[in-house]
Image (tube, rainbow, N blue to C red; front, side, top):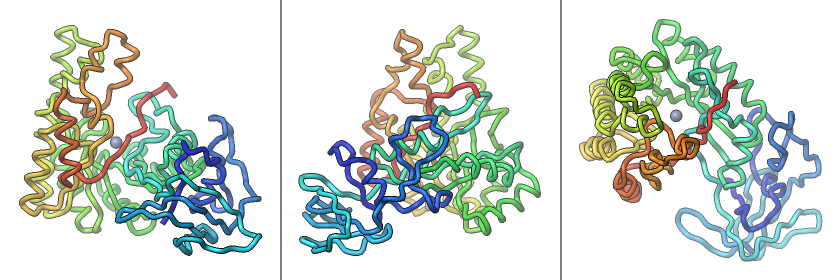
Length: 372
Ligand SMILES: [Zn+2]
């Protein structure tokens, strides 16, 4: 298990990074996350000791916390107990008065993602540096196929991820369907270690898949033992809502939320859950933003269906009033899909997370798009 020291307790990040296992693409490198964004390469830190003792901190795990030392050799925790005695050749980090806890895993990110003529502003280095500073030490990003090709998409993301300085993994989006895609899914699972595939029920004319394709994908996931994921909004109805907003002349950030209300998230969530039940395969619903969607997940789970629901920090803590701010640039920062909902949805989602109705919690650090 990985441990990290909370950055706000002023332990130099350089020491903290020494505790992390190396990412798959940087087997001989540690990255200094304090590099200025835009530096071309990570620094090689040859002076990092392979034996480290984190001394006197409060070690926090899921089941308990205790004041203890943590002894690490070659990136692996060897011992957690009070007063570990070590020789002089070992790097000692004093963690007195600080918490030492497992690093967070963010299972849903979009770094360096190209989308509708723009690109997310954080790449695999700057996004990971920000994550490390906040205590997240691993993330799972979504490979987007290139013109429907999974292998081309995979190669592109391997390239993007060369700037990595922490652990990561890949999910993959499926944006169209044919025999080649079906065969490539198998290659991804068996040779590339990707075993979760995301289907977009939104983004008509771009990533959206219809029910026929979704069912093909669900069947394929089932046959491969892979996990199917859905972005659950009814893309056809969202398109209708967008036309309505334009007719009404509502083109600000508030129009984004008005064009895709909770009922469309609830509908798509219910449909995906039922089709997954029909195919008899597990389903993971990404970024659950509304009571409507959450209640569908709760109902399915109560009936014994294997459905996982993933809320987003912004969906738990904010409400749609931010989208009505008269400052366009302020309000535009809060545009996401599904949108941030009216007051009340967030507290209901918090309760669902606390009760285990929803399971994961993500940040989606993909906001802020720029022109490539
Ligand atoms: Zn996403």
